[in-house]
Length: 126
Image (tube, rainbow, N blue to C red; front, top):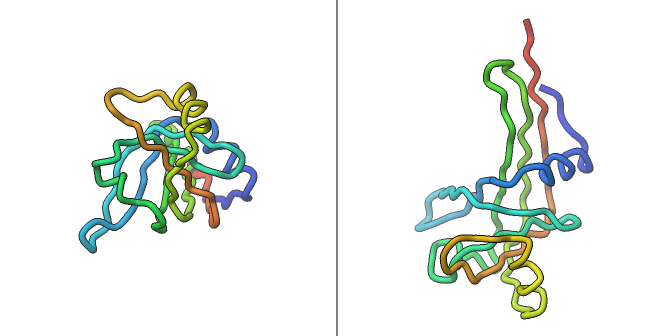
């Protein structure tokens, strides 16, 4: 495995569309797959206000995305950590609704400013 620098981690995250949001629920770790996008150095997620992710305001979370080629035994994984915050600005919500499409009543947008990011590139050793 090879560690990746900050900018490379963000570049790889920008290529992915599905990631996993890691948070605490009832004092236990919980993970949810989510659609997302990266804007500057923020991870943006669209979800429902009444679900588990809707209660993440002002909570430290982790976010992971990867791309693995099992046949070649190679790929990458990036993990970011930051404080989840609700996006309350109506104009920003409208702009994001065009970029972060979601099925159903997903009317809550969450911003995770990346505070810590680590990434690894996996390479087959033969």
